[in-house]
Length: 369
Image (cartoon, rainbow, N blue to C red):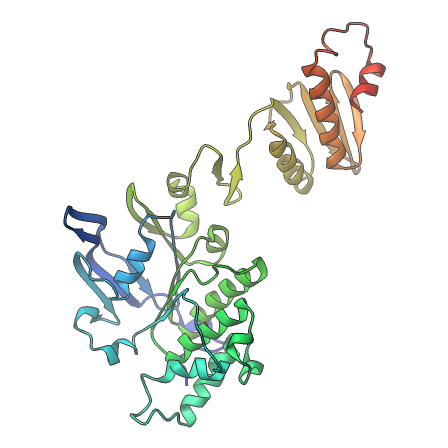
């Protein structure tokens, strides 16, 4: 049976280091010299812990994953899994300590889901490659943990991308190693499948007490599911910590920044920066404030807390009120609010309003409504 604490999370206190490194340096040796990506890393993953490795393209995430997995020689330092130095590990013992889920497409031919998951048992079977009763039980358990117990006899090549990814996770579970590593497991999946895969990995870490390390570009999902984040950046050393600490101390803003977007600490998400059209004062309940603010910012306005702005928007009694040019326009939708603002921008840009003193409030209202 799989080494797990099924239905009982009290056995996983994230106290035992499963993976740890000692002064690990990684990069590449070239004729021109050494390309050093990270130096002197002393990092760890504990039992029951889900760790997400995040960073911009080209920062060295794949190199770090390969080096930790023993697929690439480090420039310096050591990696240990369950206190065993990977450098001194025989291949058949390696497969009992670490299972890998890669992004490479598998040409499975006529293999069934059961056949794929059974590959995870190869480190344990005899030289006749015959599965015993315990092996079959572990395969069934592994499929059940990823909600694929009814897919045993389905052909792997007939599954959706999300289902295929769950099969590969089941194979890693059947291998029954203390550490599971996954390279971008949510790549090429739609949003529901990305969320499901991340939730499955979070649950499995707690249920099985295994350490799980994955690389990902899904920053929003990592912030919501990871126990710990490893944050890579070519300009600075690797930073580790809980998602909340890395947000509050500004680490995410340091790594992810650009002229066209910024990282919003309050929401833990990226925000596209549009060209400014001026300030708008907004007053509404929490829900309508959030979505009206998003619309105004997308339109190019900066939402201000100062009430003395040329434009004010209020939401009350299911109606938006837009105060502009000294008049009040009412709207039942955000779309109409934006329409009022666009009309006012056009007529102001043509100097029709400011250069026509004879226009009273009724005529201005008719123009921009």
